Every structure is written in structure tokens, then in C-alpha cells.
Image 1 (cartoon, helix red, strand yellow):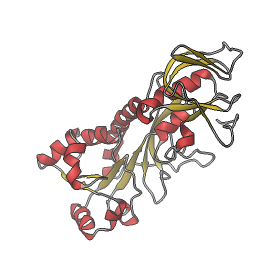
Image 2 (cartoon, helix red, strand yellow; image 1 turned 30 degrees about the horizontal axis):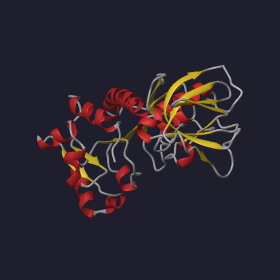
Image 3 (tube, one colour; image 1 turned 90 degrees about the vertical axis):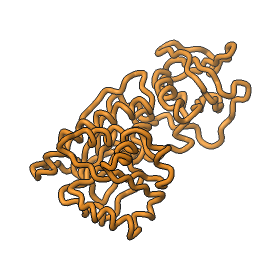
Image 4 (cartoon, one colour; image 1 turned 120 degrees about the horizontal axis):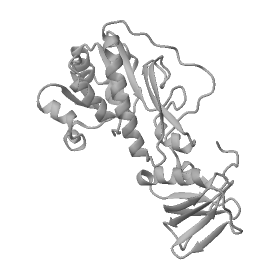
Amino acid sequence: MRCASTEPVVAALLAAPEIDLRAVVLPESPESIPESAPGPVVDAARSGKVALIGLPNRATFGSPAFRSVLEAIAPDAIVVACFPWRLPEWLLALPTRCCLNVHPSLLPEGRGPEPVFWAFRWGLVETGVTIHVMDSGFDTGPIVTQRTVTIPEVATIGSLEGMLANIGAKLLIDCLPAWLNGSAVASVQEGGQSRYASAPGPEDMVVPTTWSAPRAARFIRAVSSSHGPVSVAVYDTGQRLAVAEVVDTFDHPTMAEAVRFQGLDVHIRFSPGVLICRLATHSHPLRFHGNVPDRSEA
């Protein structure tokens, strides 16, 4: 239940001499933690430096035992990094100084649980990390600091998560002392339009040929290693082709056919460009039902 953002943040907190980390809470059963969380989390717990607490489900927030443990610690600050459940009001109010969240997007854009996936889905060139004060909303609290980064052309979900996690850990360590001594300030998030980064569904794994070929190639390469084959919806024929691997891409050349099979590869016409790829189901391209993906998808 943890993501790549957790480990660098915990490691940074443990290494900072001015930070006294008392406990780490992980969203999983206590019995599974030693196997699922190797590295500094378990090492620190075994050394007796920090308490390691497992929450098997969100209902455990209401457990008197869990609440008594956290209240006994009496934290000055709570830090959240890739935790999947919204914190209850009593927990947000518990620390004497602040609750801070390390979020892998430039808020308010990308609120929600999967901003790294959506950075690729939206075709972003840049993304970033935000440290913000937690409130009762979901990624809506005042912003402490942000850093913008360019998304590497060859990035995957995993590599970008790791890069943002390390940046977020450094930003956190830089700003946390000011919150602990009471000198920090934060800025209310700007209003306006912002896209929500929900957990992706099946249709979010479909690439329409109304995209450009380079954009399609970048998305497929980024997400296929973690999500498996990506379907290409061929606008002109109604086919869905399950792509296992991108072989090559051309920005501008086109071809008469919408789809051309050539040996083990398939050439697919986009708008503009041509994508050459290898299919997961080469001999049985699927037809899809319902509407063709919107040509105007951003």
C-alpha cells in the first residue's frame, strides 16, 4: 500500500539531526510490514529508535488503541508522504505545530491520489512537488513550498515518482525546522481551474490516435512498465490494439492506411505522426464499443 514517495521521506527524517522521529505509520497490517517495508523504516524500528505502527484499513483510525498511542507520543508535527487515506479531524488537530503533506504535483493542479500517472496522461512537460499544510480537504491546504521540475523524456511512472520523492524529502527537511520553531508561513492555494488526479480507470489506459505519435509513445513507455499493455484506439477503424512495446515513432510522416502490419510490428497513424510498436495481442486486435475517445482530449 506504500508508494515510492514514502521511503526517501522517512530516510531524510531519520538522517536529520534536528528531527526527532518518534513513529512511522504504514497503511498495512502490522504482520506484513517487515517483508513489505525493508530498509530504513524497519531498520529504525528494530533499533528501537522509532515505533512502527500498522493500520490494516481506514477504520483503524477509530481504534482507541491507535488513538492512545498517538496521543501518548504527543507529536509536534505529523508528516504524510503517499498515505492513501484522509486523516480524521482528531489526528489533524493532534500535533502542536502542523500536519504537512509531501505531494508529487504543483498544487492545486493534480490534487488526488495519482498525480504522477496524470502528468503523463495530460501530456505535461513539467510537474513538481508541493509541501502543504493539511486541512480537512483533499490536498487543499495552504502551500508551504513548491519546486517545478522538467519531466525527463524517457521517464516512467516509477522513475518520476522516485525523482519527485527525493526532491520532496529535501524540501521537507529544509522547511520543517521553521514549522517546529513557529516561524514558518504558508500561502492559501490559488483558486481557478485545477484537474483532479483520480485513480486511473480502464479508459484512462486507452490512447486515441487523435493524439500525436510522440505523445502516445511517451505515455505508453511511461505507464506500461507498471500498468501493463496500453490500448490504442484507432479513430478511423474502431480497432483497439493492445500495445506491449513502442519500437519507434515519427513526428510528421504519415501513411495511407490507419493501421499497417509489418512482420512482428504494427504501424499506426496518429494526428500527426506514425507509431511503430509491438502488440500484446498481435493477431486478435479488439474492436471497442461505445464512443470513440474525444478528439479534443487534453
